Length: 281
Ligand code: NDP
Image (cartoon, rainbow, N blue to C red; front, top):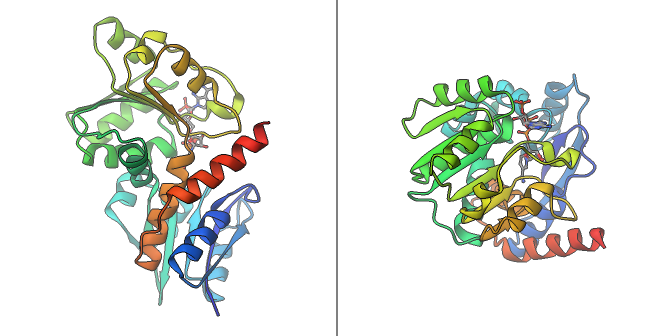
């Protein structure tokens, strides 16, 4: 029988993870079955333990359970500990191992697919929620020169920056970015890790921020470019991207952890991009 994996969340039917992992399994000839797993909002632990007890080997975890996954695990990777959240669980005898592959996925997408080395880059990270927390340490490990965290709730970004305790990091409200630009600072990379894309709204950011940037990346993805991407492109940003590549790369990192083989992502990315574009027509 195939080794069983799933993505657990609520809601979950929209997730592309089963399609992505099925494609990885085909190309690597790994014998896995990967499904959607819906958990009640107050029933995460029970759903996970039942899946494991029925022979499940591992889970990806999405909203709203990344903190619950971290809490349920008996062992944590350094990057899961740094994020305080997990998007991957692996089961081995009685042990539950937690990891966070979101940041590795983002860094790989930027450095490999978008061909932009992060070493010595100045980065502006918009947002201080779960997704932002997951990518901070991988960005620092990639050697960025500076990392500004700007968030709607300024105090949340300041606290996060203080908790990181790295001299390259500072945090505050969105005006931190505007003031930095007005003072002549420039950001090579601007990453939108807020969930404003869901609302189709625009962040209060000056066009000059994007005119000087080498990359603007929205973690959100949709059939059509997000307002963040539209602003960045019209302001003259060199490269603009959504979060589809990050999604595929974090999945590849999960597959590597579970199966010990890194799948090729280019074909899967191209197929999903075509599917997403078709939905927008
Ligand atoms: P959270 O709910 O944990 O955090 C939401 C963040 O967005 C907070 O910083 C919040 O600010 C900010 N925010 C929400 N609404 C607004 C608004 N109207 N104006 C300004 N800021 C706002 O969500 P996540 O961190 O889990 O997810 C963030 C985004 O990242 C989502 O779009 C998600 O789809 C995407 N994502 C993509 C992944 C991928 O693989 N491509 C992986 C994971 C996430 P405040 O603190 O002030 O409330």
